[in-house]
Length: 383
Image (cartoon, rainbow, N blue to C red; front, side, top):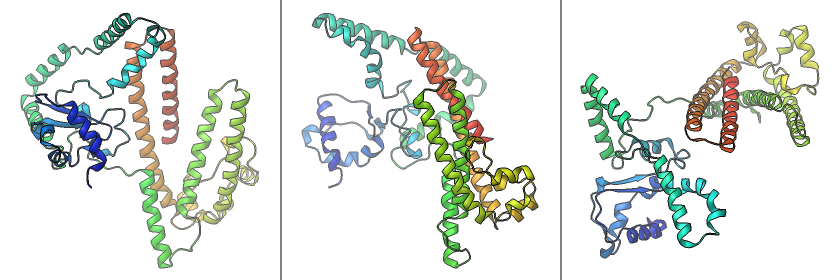
């Protein structure tokens, strides 16, 4: 029966709203995008004494900000509190957010009497509410300036937003807040290339093998990324512990095995490569990859600067396949770099405004260092 899985939630919701006069109803739920489907048809099946009278346009389904990113991109703006009329700085996680600063008072309050405990917790929650107070002066000044400088643009934007707010849960109206540009990621390009390779195999154009040009190139790109990550991690630890040293050795051993497997495939897809290498490069090619695995050169097609030499050293079509994969890698790295920079800015701003005391400042600095490390890795991958 459709909607049976939400029967318990429907009953809890209706029981909580009994005998209330409802003008606006905002339902914050981790899976609001699924729960909102057929919501009104399920409400019609509820007992008459449990029905509530409220316009469908005044019922909103939203997902808390922390739980929203794993959803599909189509859900991000439609079910986000950020783009909801009257939501302000609401994020839907306030119930769980309170735990972070009240847990520290647990050891003290559990020994108190009931009245003292209630008074102490009330003070804590009151302080938290005061910290979340948003002053409207800056917003009103900004809004007034917009109306003075570009009234037609603001008026048109308001009409556009109001229309989207009234239709977003009904007819799948496109969001005004989503980027229209569709960027192919590395995985999408890999899937596209895999389909093309499958078609060529069916037509007998390509020799059937367990590995393909795209898997060979992806192996090399993954090895190169692992080398960069290992180099950064080794440099980040000046005096590694025994456990860290063992972890580095294990990663180096895994890299050696992967590089050996890559070299075998390289003889198939780049059979003439050795003839075009310099004497120094040939010595690197012939040496077993055992020492300094992070710096071993892989000799990918893109590392051969001369185009004619690259075409003669590689199998037919291999440089073109790598170019497509590299474009996807660049897009992903650039996206990760932008996201990391935005995260760093927001975290640093929050730390400066709200973190006090040595413990909070030290923890905040540690989190910033982790973000900086991700930014550095994305930067190296982009280069």
